[in-house]
Image 1 (cartoon, rainbow, N blue to C red):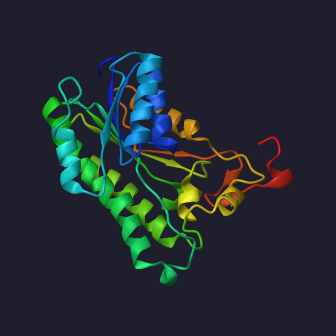
Image 2: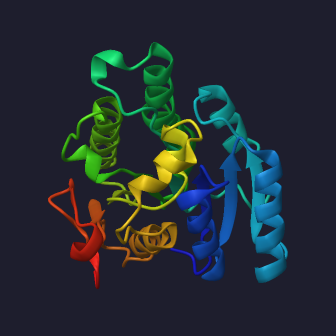
Length: 261
């Protein structure tokens, strides 16, 4: 593993993806920022290059649901950026909180396309190069939702169970190679996740994180960086990360019960 990693991060424009980019950059690594939002990506890349030196960050506009675009984005990386050491396949979302039979076709398609197909597209784009170079690490962002289904989140939970299965299966397919595969599965994290889920309803989104002490995006980024920097003989298969207020995947202490946690 080189001293300075080249790290490809999807969903890098906000939340956990942006936090991962900042964490790796602060650790001396170079980051390829991939997302759909060009303006936000360019601003983050400029911030990271100003803080950590030119050549720290590169912005790549990418819709992870587009398989060919994913292949083209990786194949078209400029000299010095093409050898990806770590791919953090983070892009993901949830829509709505309804019984499964009331989920709209559009919402189901979006969750499956981003959360599942987006991961497959990322794997197809980065793994061949890693195998050719004889090194690399694919880190997917899962969820405790892969382990316990909660009311209204059935489709989202199913997609995260698929992410875990894809990553475990990737490790099996990579058997006998030096390329690593990891799922980092966080519990409740205070980001714009709920704002997206509830179509911009700030009051409803804020209620998800009220009176408790959720993880931050930076907490999850620290976990991702830990897995990436583990000894080369180590493959962290899955890392479950929850705040102290969360137990049994779906139990979250709030109010007085959360004080001091």
